[in-house]
Length: 474
Image (tube, rainbow, N blue to C red):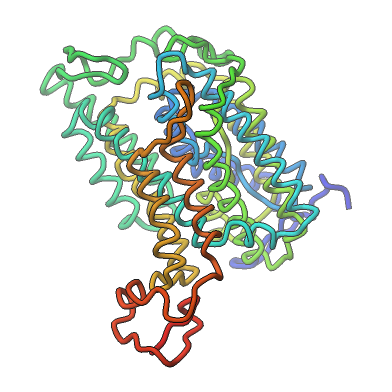
């Protein structure tokens, strides 16, 4: 069957539509538009917090989704939106010195994308089990956790102080929307929170007048409106993304390369490997199809898409859980709907006025959204541990992971000579992987009694317990 020949079906309610099937085009277009709404909030919020252009991110999310579908031969229905895995790394790069502008950010991400593509090729030929041997759930969870929690200073130092009360109310609304609102509405909580905070900021300007605070990138407090649409009025309705970023680099730009910056983004590759693996397995479970032969293709496709996007100044990409959630709710897994979504995103990306509206998002609103999002990224690491029954009574897990997590979150550094420094996420990830594999399978009889007693108060020598990962005696 041709890759672009979908079987047209009109199933009974609740019956699944498989990847190589589609509904009539009218319904398929409607589902494609729904996928755009689902990916929309996070896809343009993450470029904003990384200092990149959200309009360009939306545009390339469409191109990259098509590229992904072609590489996986339409067998893994997924949408590629902006990845959160590099957000902490980008913050660390921008904190290095004034010379590391946006071109070094996108250059580092491009290399990260190429590394991810290479991992995909390796997995394709060696099999999916290779991932689990090198990056078991204990390690993956730790890396994801330190990536998320490393972002706490960005919220506290940049976004939240711009308008603390708007930030607090936006965060409260996002928590409420994500948990309490029904079905699909809870899945677009980020988008709803952004709209809520935007409108609230506009009303605050009308009622309370300007606010005095330190804007992102500034060093002194100034009086300013929370919402300024000067850029919106000047933007064209139709055209390619253009203009300059906050650091003066053109929106569309070529990459520059720095070894330090590259090392900072490589931990994000680990998170993306884990994320893509989990998403492919989730789609396989929902569709009932064996997608292991496409695991390497999916990982490699995400890497190629990330490199392609960043080569033009765009944001890194990843398969989106939000859209997998839409498939789970609708039971429509048709890859045709994703082509429609990609085309809609491309059309949105060609509207500079839309991009200007997004770029005018008040800092306080971003503070409220990111304080929740960054915490959620960190807690995804804990979720990986829980779902895989990681036992922290086992000293391999408790001690093997602890140093790397603290080094990554706390910004511990190692200095090599006068010109090179390894720290933060990069150092934390290296320590997690090296220390874990250094002690894995090496525990002796009776070792680790202290850590086992912390989680197993009934610990007693004499009976082996395989669940502890070692000689846990009861």
